[in-house]
Amino acid sequence: MGFKRRLQPNAEFSTSSIADIVFLLLIFFLLTSQFVTQSAVKVDLPKSASEKPAEGEATVTIASDGTYQWRGSMIGEGQTRSEKEALLVEEIKAYLSDSTVKNRTINLRGDTAISYGSAALVIAAVSEMGGAVAIQTQQ
Image (cartoon, rainbow, N blue to C red):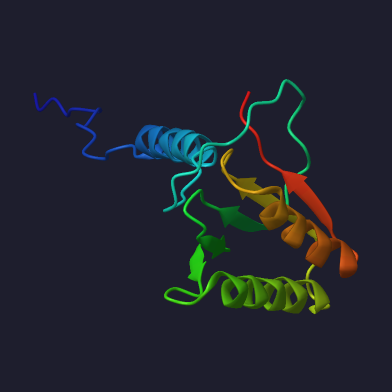
């Protein structure tokens, strides 16, 4: 009598569980990396108890040593302060005059040791072009 085996061993490997794990890890890393602020300039932000303001896409950073950073790049390295400020104002005005810019809010990250004039320069340039300034603080 020749018995025939009905069930054969299954050599397939289900990848759906691995795909689920990879997808969950991808979501985890995307959510956690979103909160990291990457800035090359060390800035001691002022403290505030208020809620976080609406953030813009562009950021101006003013360090305590008088350096300006616009959207991640240094402004006017090796130039005088007035030349740096003029370049920064030109960059802000060019950005806000672009018709493709939807979010007209500029983030201002200023060290606690900067002068009021440096912050006022940025605020005046943004308001002149009809934009808004969100001053970033730490709680």
